[in-house]
Amino acid sequence: LMPSSSKESTTNESNPIYGNNGTSSLDVHLYGPACGLPELLDKLTEKLETENNLHNVQIMVTAGANQAYVNCVLTLLSDESDQSIVFAPYYFNHVMALQMHAGDECVVVGPTVADDDSSGIPDIAWLEDYLKEHTGKVRMVTVVNPGNPTGVSIPLAKMQEIAALCQKHGVWLVVDNTYEHFDHAGANSQNDVPFVCVNGEHVINIFSFSKAFSLAGFRVGYLTASKDGAGARMFEQMLKVQDTVPICVSRLSQIAALGALNAGRAWVKEKVDTLEEGRKAIIEALSPLESVMGGSGAMYVMGKLPKGVDDLEFASTLVEKHGVAVIPGSFCGFPGWIRVCYSNLPSSECVVAASRLAEGVSLLVSQEGALLNAV
Image (cartoon, rainbow, N blue to C red; front, side, top):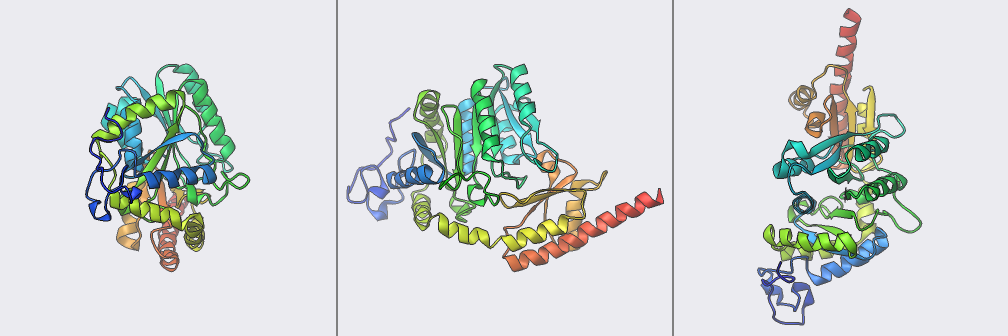
């Protein structure tokens, strides 16, 4: 494990944003510190303390939240004997990262609660039972909050229950907070803190600039771990992964991320508020279906298709005959459902897309009803 990075430049101390000892703004082509540019790390520390109630943490800037998660997988899991829990419907990139590292055998898919009041929230009773029955086998638990693909904001109290369970059983909790700015229900706000994150020596929090600041192509994310105990020891080992995979995140991308942070959360909220019209239109379009999940967080809503309908085939039908694209729930370990995103278009165009979706859904429901009547 090399210190911060032996690849760092050491020129011109007048410009600390460009390196540990500073370099010229023309030297953005050089390697940077493995964990991130100092000025960005300082700004992230301030943001984490005031907006997420995260204190006493180390920060590692990554090439997007996906790379942050891969860092976790490579650091925490040794082989296929280490189990990792995700909850269906899950974010497929998380599962693919686990599969690439240790195969299908390491992936344990837990359920989410299905009742109307708690739909899309990890089944905590199931988690407690599983951790009890498989002591020493489970290495990490992954939760996305607000959820992709569920579109559900998990309340802070539930997150604290999950964190406490993981601590009790000696399991790492990895929380993907990519959609922290999209907690429409305010389920994780507390006092003056807009999005409180769980914390502890056994908790790794992941964040992203891709969604809130629309910097997806710049590939900037970051993760946090405790400065104490197991968190500190884990972080030291993760530095080896970081130095092997990206070495460092693009300096230009980090400078863009710093500019985004300077714009602040208020700027993001203005943009998020523009999604409301499209969100309502999509929920209305899915309303003829038996069950609709989401709308309280992130930028997604899921709909349950009539029994026996293939979600992949229906998704293809929506594209070919109605000109609207959705994600089949099968991609997320949730066959028989579809995931709809309401953030990819301006609100006026999203309303148009919702009307097309409504046509496809209404036609599907009417056809299924006719078949049932015929039987």
